Figure 1 (tube, rainbow, N blue to C red):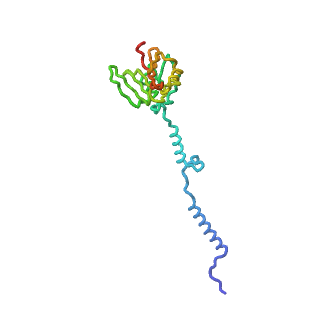
Figure 2 (cartoon, rainbow, N blue to C red):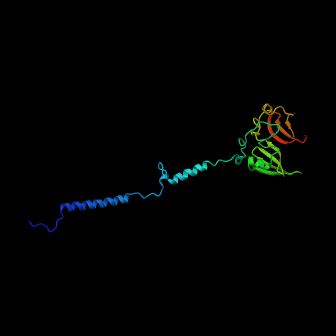
Figure 3 (tube, rainbow, N blue to C red):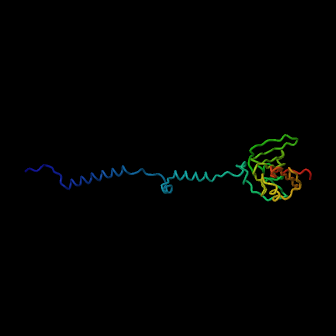
Length: 213
């Protein structure tokens, strides 16, 4: 029998198959590789990339922005620490008659309402939620009034709506007592409590100059 002119050897055939498989495997591996990430390694932790980390950081910063008391001045309560009543330096809502309109704004922020009482000596009135201040044009405080139901007066243990027993425990016996008004003379100042004669509860508290002294 005559042999064919060309027949590749078994070894050559095996080599050709191996080369083909090798090339196919490299091509498949190259196509299956994910794109190279440009994110730094420190930005990934437990499946969190740098974008998520930035969002969490921004969210944390947002949570640390807390409104100051004076930005919530209309709420009033808790914005100023209450003080024990001091007859030598009486205050309401943390403000005395020696304070100025700048002191008021520093403590309570801008008022909810502002108007001028048309008198011979005009008085600027700064109104907040449940309390107000009056100032001369020079800026000096001329009166403080607290009238909001349940509102703290700034005097420890005394708020609007308290009964006369609580008022006496906090302030002592008044210098003057009528069915409608309790008053305390303090140097050149006067602290006045307007009382409801039917319920004996405080309706408002005012601090203003005592012109009788």
